[in-house]
Length: 214
Image 1: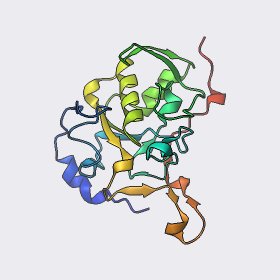
Image 2: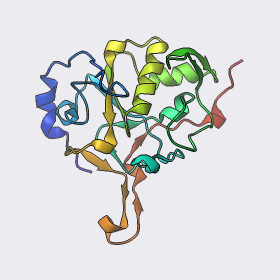
Image 3: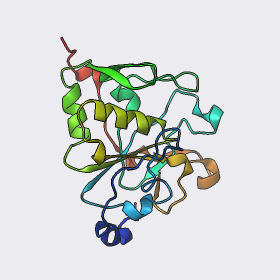
């Protein structure tokens, strides 16, 4: 696949990254400055990590609210680290949300703030620290903004610097020029659906090989 970010790298590296500024008008606190409308201007930077926190296929029925349960495309340069594998989910506005294994079990207060995060495996924190290193800015996206918000809240609760974490919103609304297709449908291929998941930079978390926390 052609790296479409190469043409923007020199321009974006020169720009100073503004501090996170969650939009109070956004249901999920999507950043005012770095979001789906502007992300193409911020791609390809060595001082930024790019994370897409969706599942390859999400059992939650997002199609019922206009979303996509299949991760049909991401943005070039983003590593896929599914949030539902990181921590238990808050109640979602759709049915059949993921209820399987997670690195952490969370509890929340009445306002939705995390009150506790219990590691389910001895490796839980190590995995999180390697997938979300603390020495760079991290741009986090998902489909609609919710998983990205949950990931940002989890990291902050566990000690990450809030000024390094950006919820850049939902890829379902992305109209930029750096889409990386992972699924091509018959109307695009003229044949069968092509599941090109080999194009993805995907973080595999194999729970069967982890050690339960004591």
